[in-house]
Length: 225
Picture 1 (cartoon, rainbow, N blue to C red):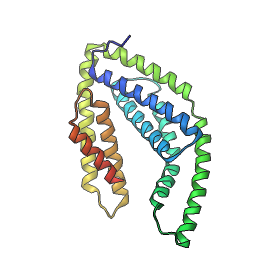
Picture 2: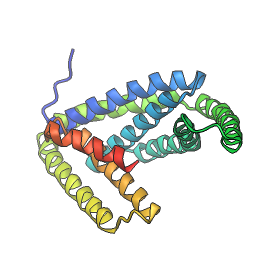
Picture 3: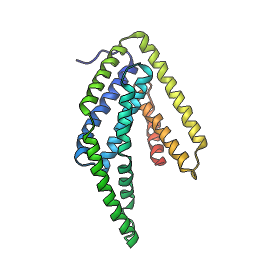
Picture 4: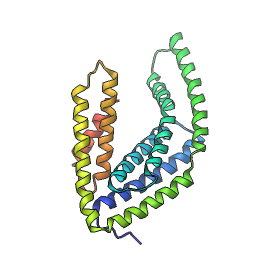
């Protein structure tokens, strides 16, 4: 039987977290066996989106354990960073001329990826999916209860709009200071843009985003690297 939730914000957040949790569990199982490039990328994306959803939850509801849950997801995301970077390098190397130097680098990169994949599998096998799943179930129960509270529902909509405005201003500040000659500023802009885009994905069911704008945001994120 579907949950009867009166707040579109809490309903959107519940569905978003539930969907991303299902994707995370599926990709985690695959990645524990064979952490290929596409799977690692997908797992990292699901971890970022879970983090974005939990960040919204943390501002809407005072709930014990949310900060720790975000910390665990962030640690898992960080543990896959080096492997992801090596896999991106491998993809970029395809089609390169097979000079002696390139061939040696490609061989070295392949060995590095294998080592990192072994480390990633070990790290992911330690992930406490059952415990995390219990926490996610409790979060869903809280969101159902909050969505049926008229006062909370009204406040949630204005809080979400405030979050979007705040993150957009932060993005504007990053764009103003971004320089092509400064990799750190470009990276900061990309991270903030991603944060803003994921927040929109949480908010979208209750605050619709035009399809053309959503596609443009995705394109810009890709161009940022």
